[in-house]
Image (cartoon, rainbow, N blue to C red; front, top):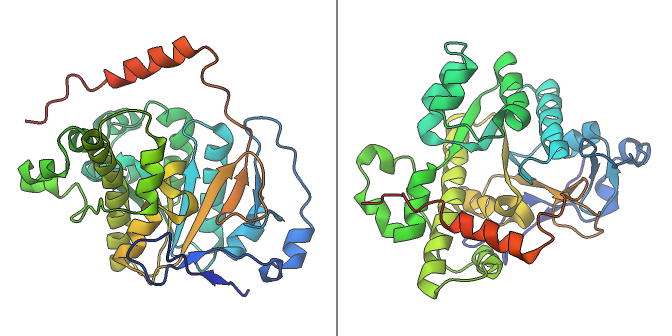
Length: 325
Protein backbone atom coordinates (compact mmCIF):
# COMPACT_ATOMS: atom_id res chain seq x y z
CA UNK A 1 0.00 0.00 0.00
CA UNK A 2 1.36 3.41 -0.97
CA UNK A 3 0.99 6.10 1.65
CA UNK A 4 1.49 9.79 1.05
CA UNK A 5 3.24 11.58 3.89
CA UNK A 6 2.05 15.10 4.65
CA UNK A 7 4.66 17.33 6.25
CA UNK A 8 2.76 19.61 8.61
CA UNK A 9 5.53 22.06 9.42
CA UNK A 10 3.16 24.83 10.32
CA UNK A 11 1.24 22.61 12.72
CA UNK A 12 4.12 20.91 14.46
CA UNK A 13 6.41 23.20 16.41
CA UNK A 14 10.05 22.20 16.20
CA UNK A 15 9.51 19.48 13.57
CA UNK A 16 10.85 19.99 10.09
CA UNK A 17 9.42 16.68 8.90
CA UNK A 18 6.29 15.69 10.73
CA UNK A 19 5.48 12.05 10.02
CA UNK A 20 1.73 12.10 10.47
CA UNK A 21 -0.14 9.80 8.12
CA UNK A 22 -2.71 11.81 6.20
CA UNK A 23 -3.53 10.33 2.80
CA UNK A 24 -5.37 12.99 0.84
CA UNK A 25 -5.91 11.11 -2.41
CA UNK A 26 -8.32 8.27 -3.04
CA UNK A 27 -5.67 6.42 -5.05
CA UNK A 28 -3.86 5.42 -1.87
CA UNK A 29 -6.75 3.17 -0.89
CA UNK A 30 -7.26 -0.47 -1.69
CA UNK A 31 -10.45 -0.13 -3.69
CA UNK A 32 -11.53 -3.69 -2.97
CA UNK A 33 -11.36 -3.23 0.79
CA UNK A 34 -13.07 0.15 0.73
CA UNK A 35 -15.69 0.15 -1.99
CA UNK A 36 -17.20 -3.08 -0.71
CA UNK A 37 -17.98 -1.43 2.60
CA UNK A 38 -21.43 0.06 2.77
CA UNK A 39 -22.53 2.89 5.00
CA UNK A 40 -23.50 1.57 8.40
CA UNK A 41 -26.34 3.13 10.31
CA UNK A 42 -25.12 5.39 13.09
CA UNK A 43 -28.30 5.88 15.04
CA UNK A 44 -27.49 4.72 18.58
CA UNK A 45 -24.69 5.62 20.97
CA UNK A 46 -23.12 2.22 20.37
CA UNK A 47 -22.78 2.71 16.59
CA UNK A 48 -19.77 4.04 14.70
CA UNK A 49 -18.53 4.31 11.14
CA UNK A 50 -14.91 4.70 10.02
CA UNK A 51 -13.69 6.83 7.14
CA UNK A 52 -10.48 8.06 5.57
CA UNK A 53 -9.41 11.72 5.83
CA UNK A 54 -11.18 12.25 2.50
CA UNK A 55 -14.43 10.77 3.83
CA UNK A 56 -14.36 7.39 2.10
CA UNK A 57 -15.91 4.63 4.19
CA UNK A 58 -13.61 1.99 5.73
CA UNK A 59 -14.15 -1.26 7.55
CA UNK A 60 -12.11 -1.75 10.68
CA UNK A 61 -10.03 -4.42 8.94
CA UNK A 62 -9.30 -2.04 6.08
CA UNK A 63 -8.33 0.66 8.57
CA UNK A 64 -5.76 -1.61 10.17
CA UNK A 65 -4.27 -2.28 6.73
CA UNK A 66 -3.93 1.46 6.16
CA UNK A 67 -2.22 2.13 9.47
CA UNK A 68 -0.09 -1.00 9.70
CA UNK A 69 3.17 0.99 9.41
CA UNK A 70 2.28 3.56 12.05
CA UNK A 71 4.47 3.67 15.14
CA UNK A 72 1.83 5.50 17.15
CA UNK A 73 -1.96 5.55 16.71
CA UNK A 74 -3.63 8.41 18.57
CA UNK A 75 -7.35 7.96 19.19
CA UNK A 76 -9.18 11.04 20.37
CA UNK A 77 -12.28 10.55 22.46
CA UNK A 78 -15.24 12.34 23.92
CA UNK A 79 -15.06 10.92 27.42
CA UNK A 80 -17.96 8.55 28.25
CA UNK A 81 -19.13 8.23 24.61
CA UNK A 82 -20.10 4.55 24.35
CA UNK A 83 -19.47 4.18 20.61
CA UNK A 84 -15.98 5.63 20.86
CA UNK A 85 -15.07 3.33 23.72
CA UNK A 86 -16.50 0.38 21.81
CA UNK A 87 -14.35 1.30 18.82
CA UNK A 88 -11.22 1.54 20.96
CA UNK A 89 -11.65 -2.03 22.17
CA UNK A 90 -12.56 -3.26 18.69
CA UNK A 91 -9.43 -1.67 17.23
CA UNK A 92 -7.16 -2.96 19.99
CA UNK A 93 -8.42 -6.48 19.32
CA UNK A 94 -8.07 -6.08 15.55
CA UNK A 95 -4.52 -4.74 15.80
CA UNK A 96 -3.47 -7.46 18.21
CA UNK A 97 -4.99 -10.15 16.01
CA UNK A 98 -3.30 -8.72 12.92
CA UNK A 99 0.26 -8.23 14.19
CA UNK A 100 0.41 -9.15 17.89
CA UNK A 101 2.86 -6.33 18.61
CA UNK A 102 0.42 -3.73 19.89
CA UNK A 103 0.79 -1.82 23.15
CA UNK A 104 -1.99 0.18 24.77
CA UNK A 105 -1.19 3.64 26.16
CA UNK A 106 -3.73 5.54 28.24
CA UNK A 107 -4.32 9.12 29.34
CA UNK A 108 -6.55 7.72 32.08
CA UNK A 109 -3.68 6.41 34.23
CA UNK A 110 -0.72 8.42 35.47
CA UNK A 111 2.88 7.30 35.67
CA UNK A 112 2.83 6.78 39.43
CA UNK A 113 0.14 4.10 38.95
CA UNK A 114 2.27 1.98 36.58
CA UNK A 115 3.41 -0.48 39.30
CA UNK A 116 -0.12 -1.26 40.49
CA UNK A 117 -1.34 -1.45 36.88
CA UNK A 118 1.39 -3.99 36.17
CA UNK A 119 0.34 -5.97 39.25
CA UNK A 120 -3.23 -6.13 38.03
CA UNK A 121 -2.24 -7.17 34.50
CA UNK A 122 -0.12 -9.94 36.02
CA UNK A 123 -3.06 -11.21 38.08
CA UNK A 124 -1.39 -10.38 41.39
CA UNK A 125 -4.23 -8.19 42.71
CA UNK A 126 -7.96 -7.88 42.09
CA UNK A 127 -9.85 -5.11 40.35
CA UNK A 128 -11.01 -3.29 43.48
CA UNK A 129 -7.54 -2.57 44.94
CA UNK A 130 -6.28 -1.85 41.43
CA UNK A 131 -8.87 0.81 40.64
CA UNK A 132 -8.54 2.36 44.10
CA UNK A 133 -4.74 2.49 44.21
CA UNK A 134 -4.47 3.58 40.56
CA UNK A 135 -7.08 6.34 41.04
CA UNK A 136 -9.10 5.00 38.12
CA UNK A 137 -11.55 7.41 36.55
CA UNK A 138 -15.18 7.23 37.75
CA UNK A 139 -16.24 5.81 34.37
CA UNK A 140 -13.60 3.06 34.44
CA UNK A 141 -15.99 0.13 34.74
CA UNK A 142 -18.21 1.18 31.84
CA UNK A 143 -15.61 2.64 29.48
CA UNK A 144 -12.06 1.43 30.16
CA UNK A 145 -12.52 -1.97 31.78
CA UNK A 146 -12.96 -3.63 28.33
CA UNK A 147 -9.56 -2.32 27.20
CA UNK A 148 -7.75 -3.35 30.36
CA UNK A 149 -9.38 -6.77 30.49
CA UNK A 150 -8.52 -7.45 26.85
CA UNK A 151 -4.94 -6.39 27.52
CA UNK A 152 -4.80 -8.58 30.62
CA UNK A 153 -6.18 -11.64 28.82
CA UNK A 154 -3.87 -11.24 25.82
CA UNK A 155 -0.61 -10.16 27.47
CA UNK A 156 -0.75 -6.68 25.92
CA UNK A 157 1.48 -4.09 27.60
CA UNK A 158 -0.32 -1.03 28.98
CA UNK A 159 1.44 2.31 29.50
CA UNK A 160 0.18 4.52 32.32
CA UNK A 161 1.15 7.54 30.27
CA UNK A 162 -0.14 10.62 32.01
CA UNK A 163 1.04 13.04 34.65
CA UNK A 164 -0.48 12.89 38.15
CA UNK A 165 -3.52 15.12 38.38
CA UNK A 166 -2.54 16.93 41.58
CA UNK A 167 0.82 17.98 40.16
CA UNK A 168 -0.75 19.31 36.98
CA UNK A 169 -3.39 21.17 38.98
CA UNK A 170 -0.62 22.88 40.93
CA UNK A 171 1.08 23.85 37.68
CA UNK A 172 -2.22 25.45 36.71
CA UNK A 173 -2.20 27.43 39.93
CA UNK A 174 1.50 28.25 40.36
CA UNK A 175 3.03 27.84 36.90
CA UNK A 176 5.82 25.62 35.60
CA UNK A 177 8.12 26.81 38.39
CA UNK A 178 6.13 24.48 40.64
CA UNK A 179 8.09 21.60 39.13
CA UNK A 180 11.25 22.93 40.78
CA UNK A 181 9.74 22.30 44.22
CA UNK A 182 8.99 18.61 43.67
CA UNK A 183 10.98 15.79 45.26
CA UNK A 184 13.06 13.80 42.77
CA UNK A 185 10.64 10.87 42.55
CA UNK A 186 7.60 13.05 41.95
CA UNK A 187 9.47 15.12 39.38
CA UNK A 188 9.97 11.93 37.37
CA UNK A 189 6.21 11.65 37.02
CA UNK A 190 6.21 14.71 34.74
CA UNK A 191 7.99 15.07 31.40
CA UNK A 192 11.58 16.22 31.77
CA UNK A 193 10.91 19.00 29.26
CA UNK A 194 7.63 20.93 29.16
CA UNK A 195 7.51 23.36 26.24
CA UNK A 196 4.84 26.02 26.73
CA UNK A 197 6.07 28.32 23.97
CA UNK A 198 3.89 29.74 21.19
CA UNK A 199 2.31 27.17 18.87
CA UNK A 200 -0.89 26.52 16.97
CA UNK A 201 -1.97 24.23 19.80
CA UNK A 202 -1.46 27.03 22.30
CA UNK A 203 -3.52 29.38 20.14
CA UNK A 204 -6.30 26.79 19.98
CA UNK A 205 -6.24 26.30 23.73
CA UNK A 206 -6.26 30.01 24.52
CA UNK A 207 -9.18 30.51 22.14
CA UNK A 208 -11.16 27.90 24.09
CA UNK A 209 -10.88 29.84 27.35
CA UNK A 210 -13.64 32.25 28.27
CA UNK A 211 -12.12 34.22 31.13
CA UNK A 212 -8.96 34.84 33.11
CA UNK A 213 -6.04 37.23 33.13
CA UNK A 214 -3.09 36.65 30.78
CA UNK A 215 -1.09 35.34 33.73
CA UNK A 216 -3.85 32.90 34.68
CA UNK A 217 -4.36 31.61 31.15
CA UNK A 218 -0.61 31.14 30.70
CA UNK A 219 -0.55 28.93 33.79
CA UNK A 220 -3.60 27.04 32.57
CA UNK A 221 -1.88 26.33 29.27
CA UNK A 222 1.25 25.21 31.10
CA UNK A 223 -0.93 22.67 32.91
CA UNK A 224 -2.56 21.55 29.66
CA UNK A 225 0.71 21.07 27.80
CA UNK A 226 2.13 19.20 30.80
CA UNK A 227 -0.39 16.44 30.08
CA UNK A 228 0.65 16.27 26.42
CA UNK A 229 4.38 16.44 27.06
CA UNK A 230 4.22 13.71 29.70
CA UNK A 231 2.09 11.38 27.58
CA UNK A 232 4.42 11.94 24.63
CA UNK A 233 7.53 11.25 26.68
CA UNK A 234 5.98 8.08 28.12
CA UNK A 235 5.27 6.83 24.60
CA UNK A 236 8.65 7.73 23.11
CA UNK A 237 10.55 6.24 26.05
CA UNK A 238 8.61 2.99 25.65
CA UNK A 239 9.26 2.84 21.90
CA UNK A 240 12.96 3.52 22.43
CA UNK A 241 13.09 0.41 24.59
CA UNK A 242 10.65 -1.58 22.41
CA UNK A 243 11.27 -0.45 18.81
CA UNK A 244 9.27 -3.32 17.28
CA UNK A 245 6.08 -2.33 19.09
CA UNK A 246 3.16 -0.27 17.81
CA UNK A 247 1.48 1.99 20.38
CA UNK A 248 -2.25 2.74 20.43
CA UNK A 249 -2.82 5.75 22.70
CA UNK A 250 -6.22 6.97 23.84
CA UNK A 251 -6.81 10.50 25.12
CA UNK A 252 -9.30 13.32 24.96
CA UNK A 253 -9.97 14.67 21.49
CA UNK A 254 -8.43 18.05 22.25
CA UNK A 255 -5.07 16.39 22.97
CA UNK A 256 -4.90 14.62 19.60
CA UNK A 257 -7.01 16.33 16.94
CA UNK A 258 -5.25 17.62 13.85
CA UNK A 259 -1.80 16.42 14.84
CA UNK A 260 -1.52 19.06 17.56
CA UNK A 261 -0.94 18.50 21.26
CA UNK A 262 0.39 15.03 21.99
CA UNK A 263 1.39 14.33 18.37
CA UNK A 264 3.53 17.46 18.27
CA UNK A 265 5.13 16.57 21.58
CA UNK A 266 5.93 13.06 20.32
CA UNK A 267 7.54 14.33 17.13
CA UNK A 268 9.54 16.94 19.01
CA UNK A 269 11.15 14.02 20.81
CA UNK A 270 11.50 11.70 17.82
CA UNK A 271 10.68 13.17 14.41
CA UNK A 272 11.23 9.78 12.74
CA UNK A 273 8.10 8.27 14.25
CA UNK A 274 5.04 7.81 12.05
CA UNK A 275 1.79 8.87 13.68
CA UNK A 276 -1.84 8.21 12.76
CA UNK A 277 -4.62 10.29 14.30
CA UNK A 278 -8.21 9.03 14.51
CA UNK A 279 -10.73 11.70 15.49
CA UNK A 280 -14.42 11.39 16.42
CA UNK A 281 -16.76 13.45 14.26
CA UNK A 282 -20.51 13.86 13.88
CA UNK A 283 -20.30 14.56 10.16
CA UNK A 284 -17.75 13.22 7.68
CA UNK A 285 -15.51 15.78 6.02
CA UNK A 286 -13.85 15.52 2.58
CA UNK A 287 -10.57 17.14 3.64
CA UNK A 288 -9.78 16.18 7.22
CA UNK A 289 -6.21 15.81 8.45
CA UNK A 290 -7.24 12.74 10.46
CA UNK A 291 -8.95 9.42 9.94
CA UNK A 292 -12.57 9.91 10.96
CA UNK A 293 -14.72 8.07 13.50
CA UNK A 294 -18.35 8.95 12.83
CA UNK A 295 -20.57 8.77 15.92
CA UNK A 296 -23.69 10.43 17.24
CA UNK A 297 -23.32 13.93 18.60
CA UNK A 298 -23.19 13.92 22.42
CA UNK A 299 -26.36 15.25 24.05
CA UNK A 300 -26.62 18.98 24.70
CA UNK A 301 -25.10 19.53 28.12
CA UNK A 302 -27.04 22.66 29.01
CA UNK A 303 -30.20 24.28 27.70
CA UNK A 304 -30.65 26.94 30.35
CA UNK A 305 -27.80 29.47 30.84
CA UNK A 306 -28.25 29.41 34.61
CA UNK A 307 -27.52 25.68 34.68
CA UNK A 308 -24.35 26.23 32.67
CA UNK A 309 -23.17 28.97 35.01
CA UNK A 310 -23.95 26.82 38.05
CA UNK A 311 -21.83 24.02 36.61
CA UNK A 312 -18.96 26.38 35.78
CA UNK A 313 -19.04 27.76 39.31
CA UNK A 314 -18.87 24.27 40.78
CA UNK A 315 -15.98 23.47 38.45
CA UNK A 316 -14.07 26.53 39.60
CA UNK A 317 -14.44 25.40 43.22
CA UNK A 318 -13.27 21.82 42.77
CA UNK A 319 -9.62 22.60 43.58
CA UNK A 320 -10.24 24.91 46.53
CA UNK A 321 -8.60 22.43 48.94
CA UNK A 322 -5.59 21.85 46.68
CA UNK A 323 -2.29 22.44 48.46
CA UNK A 324 0.74 23.35 46.37
CA UNK A 325 3.13 24.39 49.15
